[in-house]
Length: 268
Image (tube, rainbow, N blue to C red; front, side, top):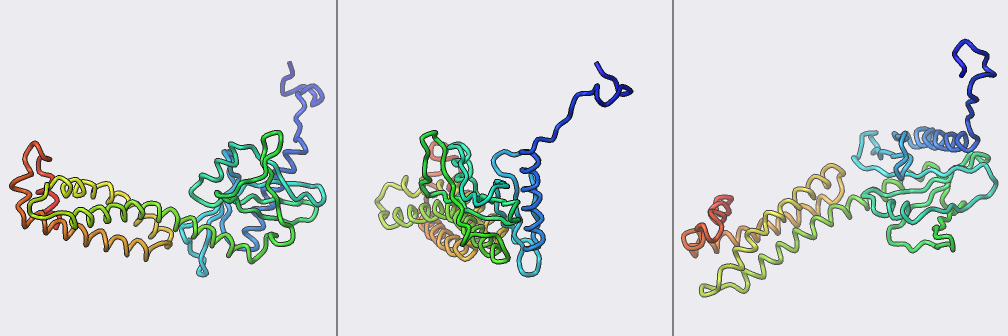
């Protein structure tokens, strides 16, 4: 066994494989181009768990928008390569991320980058070997100054969809309250109103999540404000009915919720 004082020829040979060199060159070239052309931060990940890099989108004032896009970087030194093949698990991972994912094909020979946004709704071509083909349009999707708008639009769309997923639950709760109020009269069983009253807790959790996403990313704020107002107004009407008809006195005992109604009425 060699020790440190023995000749280099005796030591274990250390190699830097060509494939690793090509891959690293592609990642560094990609990060360099994003910083140079767009002036945006690009973070390369040491551990590849499905994406290689994350780009933070900045506004015109160079301040962060709170939005991000992810990239898987594929590199080639061959001429006119316009497709890549990926496994089903990797494609599913990209489709299920909360932020948009782009594949970046780095052509080292041409010193150019080509982009493909992973479409969560698309059915990609599957090979006999079980892999999926991702095509790159070299004419239309070359990275350049205009790519910033593409990334920004994709990130905004993804954030609005994330906000919308929570707001949909809020709208369902609002509709439930309105339907119960429309059906209820003085002789009705109050349990339906009590049930939608309790459902407000989960709806408020979704409302809080929508608020955080919307204001952190500056996307979907008007939709959030609209649905919050409708939800609050429905709760106010529910509170008025329950208060005027003595729900707290008649239905707030140990068998019916141990103070749930009282706490709800106090919120108003």
